[in-house]
Length: 409
Image 1 (tube, one colour):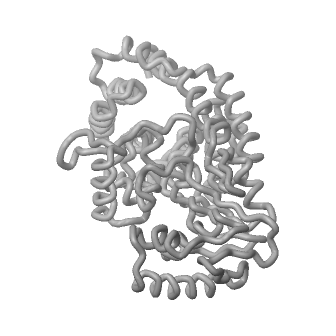
Image 2 (tube, helix red, strand yellow):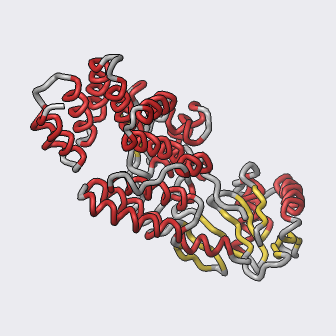
Image 3 (spheres, one colour):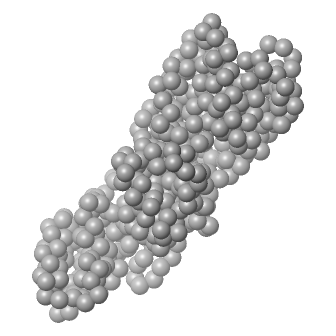
């Protein structure tokens, strides 16, 4: 590799894409095309970057397997940045195997971290953890060590292990500062927002206050009876009852928990559960049926009893009742997970959201249309190139709404 290519590569490694382009902007040989593609990706022109990298991969030819594999890894990173979750992960895995076979451990490790990032985006935490087990970051460059700690922190945040997350982010910040790459330092700072901004609201005793993720973790580990409106479950003493597929029962449980230790009038419960402005006998009859179902569901944790004017909740063992609510609730409840994904500030395609949520693309498209009508999201582009985005909500983190299981024990 000639000195100009080497200098351009070092500029990219140091986070200086303009410096790299100054050296190779007028060259069309395969190494220069690859470096130009990576530089354009760092500058945000992902479409041009992808085209340059594909041209470089074709130009390298079959006899330069390592160079082609590096192009595939770079293209995979661009796909993740563009939230193109349909990009074939098998191609990245094959590139990683090629790099390991030829002794390029640094780029092979980078490919593994890209695999972990993709798994995190789609909420497959156990697989992400297994992929990290075999990676020892100590022999790698400091920028890659920062990436490793960001992955560790991302998993810990989704598992509500805030102590592990803070320690990992501290190590990531140290590595990013040593690397001297502003974009990497900004990424670490952005990841830290999940721990330093409110993640939910606590509704208890007629009052309301915001909770940081650490406070949410403490609440779920306490002996309180918690109605979790972020995951649509009821928790107490390590026991979890899911009402995610029973929206009417969950609405009733939340209304009763918000009123504890008092009761809730029947007409109020009808309005909360069925959306009826005026309760008639058919609504009251349906309410009795649904209350009976709720009693059966909550029997291990609480008693739902009738009063003169309505119903009340009484936990069997807990002395406190709390509702853990979403940070904001001005958008439709059923679309909260879509909003959580879009809140990262990136533009997502409907197909990528479907992959991340494990839903059909048509279901996601209906959700996006509903959110767009309510002003919650906005489309960019048309046809197959259409993508969706929304600015992050100031002062809040959406960690609890992301598509990943929270601890239930």
